[in-house]
Length: 228
Image (tube, rainbow, N blue to C red):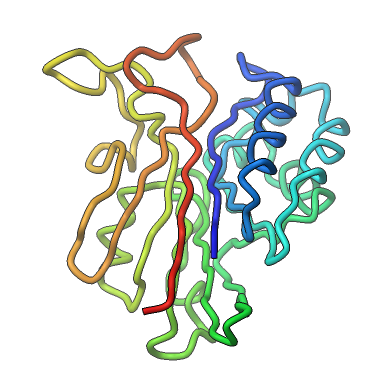
């Protein structure tokens, strides 16, 4: 079973609808079963003038087992919470905001996708997000903020998928990320083994604040799950 994650497009700063269209086509070429979006769709939701043009693009994504999304801090910012939710629901994404979804696989097995609200401008509630998931069920947590993995690792969660950091967006050789946002200061990019939990932090696709990246390549992440 193949999942593809994209994150942090920040539409309206540098990333434009034509870039989103190109990403959608690239994801479809990879033939995913599930598509995950881990937050920050628009840089400033209430100032983005092409909101109605986003769903026709995102609706082109093909994922037979579902499309799932969570809130990032920019999705809440600028009075954007309902704007973002409306766009994603019109794009046939299931919103995971302190709730979960059961995904039935062709092998008759199942996994559980759960998502917490954004750590900066939302109200993440792990207990609520995990309620209803049976003990021992294979659980994947979507959290925009990677540093919440320290909390996830205290629960029966197997994998956490995050964004937010942009990989620092600008990295200095021998020093690393120039600037990291709150809740992405400990886990900046890549995969981390936290005991019973594995965390992957996606560098995202767009930019914010600074109109460039350096040594922090945009990223799509492919996850392949196989039965033991």
